[in-house]
Image (cartoon, rainbow, N blue to C red; front, side, top):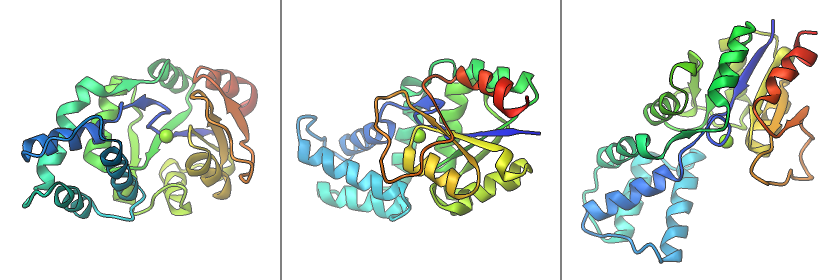
Length: 227
Ligand SMILES: [Mg+2]
């Protein structure tokens, strides 16, 4: 038996800067609207979100720093979460053929799962919005795992959840370092989904295979996984 694990953001769905836009809405609510032309402010937001995503900073700390930088006090992280949820329908979209590919893999009896970095309630909502009924039943999110890709523990959790030998587990993602190199280092096969014009860093081991469209996974299953 063979299984495929997927990254979510920029692999199965896109959120068009949802968390950044939620911070902008939150700032406006705090009476400190951000200037869209302010490049430094934008850089500051991206830095905060980046540190939050890697687990370097908690959500509460991120919101506190954000609000302090605006000169606002008593900012409630729960309000920022509400702004995030409110933007899901408007901003989240599936990547081309994501639903069709997941359905086709399921029809072929391939077990699928999502392993994503992020915070569970938002990732669950984004996945439901992007994939609807085609979403895999098994969804692992880094905040609940206590491990952020490319940490090995994140991929180990995927192996345990899917109950397949790790060399028969393929992991598909757009991020060379977080997805592909992380999967390879954990003994999985790494599929690089190369669709946004990024280059693959020279210092990383090459992917097991490179695809430019999700549909290619169906052919891969036919030819490579279960010959
Ligand atoms: Mg991604």
